[in-house]
Amino acid sequence: MLDKSADHTSVADDGEDLCCDVPHLDHSVHADLLQQEPLTSEKAQRMAEFLGFLADPNRLRILSILAKQELCVGDLAATLGMNESAVSHQLRTLRAIRLVSSRKQGRHVFYRLQDHHVLSFYQAVVEHLDED
Image (tube, rainbow, N blue to C red):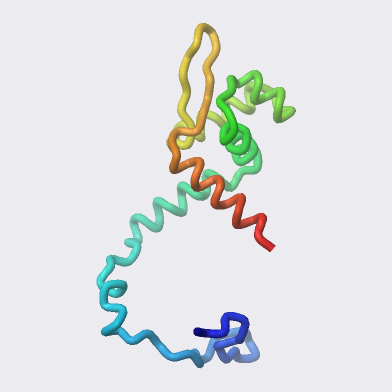
């Protein structure tokens, strides 16, 4: 078992890695891993754009509430201390990238997370940030 706490690289004065001191993978043993397709440039670009939409604190705050329950714009605005126009603007963006969906009930529109993938992703990020 490798000691994960040890520093396994040599670093030049300018911070650039010079070489790796750990043994490299035995390619015959890891053939299955090596045969998997790497992330394409196109998919990497799409992922970066998608994640860029999440780089807004208000959108993340909205997602944190919708992770618990569905709400209408007015209730979201009151909970967040934002005006309804600003919340609606953020919800339009979140709907455009299919993170949230809506349903109409009378004069009210209720928003919720689109599916379990969104909730799982949100929870994974929260857990990661809560780690010490």
